[in-house]
Length: 128
Figure 1 (tube, one colour):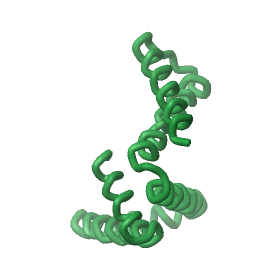
Figure 2 (cartoon, one colour):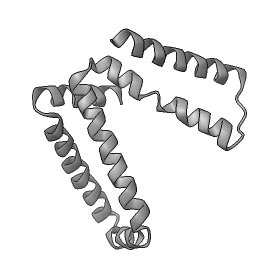
Figure 3 (tube, rainbow, N blue to C red):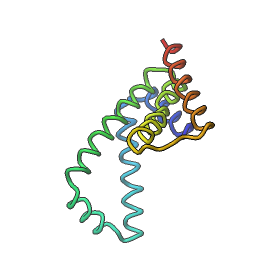
Figure 4 (tube, rainbow, N blue to C red):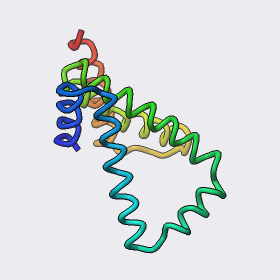
């Protein structure tokens, strides 16, 4: 993931963030269509899309908006810092698990969460 994010950032800086985003979308469409063709699940995927159109279209919109913002962040900020801060989504997932699902954390998980939060804040402060 880190190497992939680095190359996305590098491509965004060398060309244009929107061009890099477009290239990634085209690449993933070709790979996905190839996979669906090989597994012969295109029709099933289409039917699933029709059944869940609202959810899938809203997810696609917000996912593309987030990825576009991420590519612009990689083009404008130091790549190492932008990638590190963006990987902090794990913190949100853990907190949602704790509060929404009433999950309990073990000691080493709590220590990791505190370390992740501290590191994200430290990177955000030192970036500016």
